[in-house]
Image (cartoon, rainbow, N blue to C red):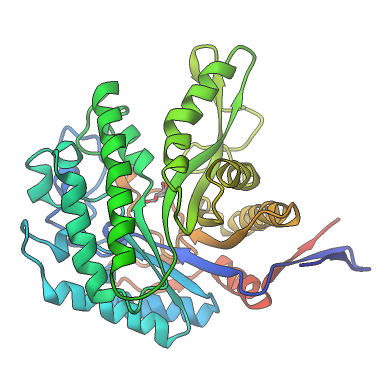
Length: 404
Ligand code: BGC
């Protein structure tokens, strides 16, 4: 890994050989027609505050081959996607061979294109048969999840590149039991929030065990939502408490795993009364988050320090209609990641969220995280300049930034 500045004022940042450059998606956000999970029910509950139905999403359940080809054509080395549990196990204990075969074809197509399939086993959606009897609060929810993971891994394991057990278990708890914006829509219930966090940690540990006992031999990890959290005067203890509950609990739960996945987008502030407003001098994204690409290095350092695991940035990106700004943001974020490598942190890969403009949960189709747009009505994929730019970064295994 070298860093050099040439005569034209360009600085090239080389990444270590074998560094992984990928894009991420999630089943419910792109597949369409996932009618058998808690999110579909939530989107159709007039009291949920969710602005749209996921509907057909990007129709990736049928157009997945185009998606995989896009990833390969761009020159990326990995595609992170998730399995839809409610398709694979539509009723309790009843497994769909056809659904498993669908995901097997996806993994095989990735392999055929030289793209590493990075498979997430739970990305926010839970089958209705389980939510009907308490969801993550059902006493046997972790065992139910482990049973599903065992079956899916038995069918796919020989093709899996890396496995992520649960996507952002901390967000499931916060959004579902504190802020009430994700199902089951509970607000400010610390007791239920803590119980779900514990269930998710237990589910993760059981899933790691299941994955390691099945066919194949691939790295297994957990992906965690993180932010650069700063303390204003008097906000230090609340900031520390927030970090402890929201992030550290899950970072420590990765003990023995092969990697920890860091998913970061922004910076947040804590004052003496809790979360404080954004810094007004910093522009905001379509999510009303501070546009703060350098959060990457803060989060990667914390994740590495607390977990002691190798790190992969499994999601980073920006919701914006301005694709030139996406390139600028990603470029700053990648520079930020590079500083971690220069410090000797074992960072193994960087994934952009997201390949496609897709269903952004309670915010519907407003926020544009994609490097590829999807035409309404035809589902035609149109790569934006950022997609080609990121492909060049992957092919060069490095970044060239122009300096004034
Ligand atoms: C989630 C994605 C989501 C993205 C942007 C992450 O928290 O894993 O599902 O779309 O952030 O908000």
